[in-house]
Length: 308
Image: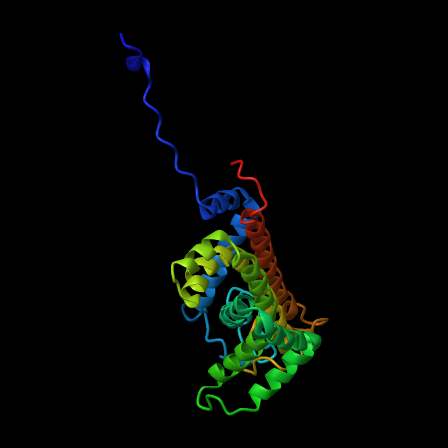
């Protein structure tokens, strides 16, 4: 028998998992993040189908059942106008989640475009663009947010739809304030990647700046951006709740968890359920987003060893 016959065929090399697959595998092992993810999905489901899940219209009043406690008819009791607190809590989920998620998405779009252009252009353009960001950073976030919110409220937007007017003003105010952090993060990532070999190769092949940014660089920084996004959402919900708490948020009869907490604060000693239930909803939602953000950061951290 010849020596060639004893040679075993070489095994085909196994394909390595991508960064996303490895990250998802690590994320699935983080039980707290997985539970938080399902809780967030459930809250989003409640927010989307709020009209179908509410036992009563959120603004319907029952004059004979003012400030009642929990009962078979009103599971979480009623408020000072006899409105079902459970229905208003479900409706509040829609408003709070809409503000948190939509604001984060709008901030991502603005911040990603601004930071990408600044980091890629470099030089004088980068310096001027970042000085504008520094000016916004020098203004306290809360003060800037209140000023922007008051400015938008003074505009006559959607006069025939007060719900959309209130929501739009909140979205625009939070978006114009929160994009700054995303812009700085994206700029830093672009500065790191634009001198990498695959970017230089794309330039040598005649790829346009737009294609390099959004086809080569942006997909590689999507992981850190998603992590930052999950941290940004609870911050936006908290800001919305604070504005509603001080009377600059949604106006009655519309409700968010912050406005419900504001209504309950005035009579907390006598009727604590008006404050407790919105507070619990806010606590668990923000806690879930923070746990999910921590899990995503650990899962997609490029410095972690791929030992799975």
